[in-house]
Image 1 (cartoon, helix red, strand yellow):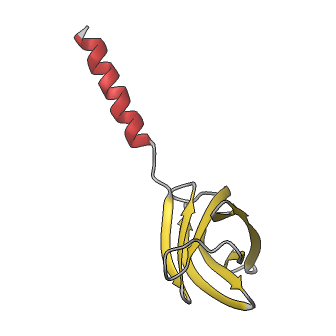
Image 2: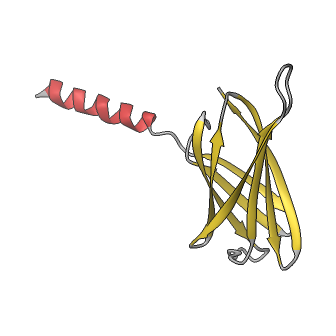
Amino acid sequence: MKKIIAVTLILLLTAGVAVAKSYEVNRKAGNYSVHITMDKNPPSVGVNNMEIAVTDKGGKPVKDAKVVVDYGMPAMPGMPPMNYKADAKLDGEKYNASLNISMPGSWSVNVRISVAGKTVSTKFTFDVN
């Protein structure tokens, strides 16, 4: 009985460690706060889902924005730059986009937020192994 309990505890602890927290980034874009969450941590080759929460100075969700995610890698010897774009779609109070990461390396991301004809942006980078 003690062995069963010990094995169960070890399995539960191992499962808890295996569940990784999402990749998160907090930035400012003009007067907006931007909280970005990616479903994989670290981001990996393939589809990575991004959730973008945009809030105003009062902390209220901004739901009337056009959000575009530009991402890519700079040119390297023998390889031109890779540039991609994903239009984020509003889902409730957050915007969702899918980034298709084609290879390992350092990726640059620029999130553009347009509201009432004014565009602001914020940038960050992440590494894919």
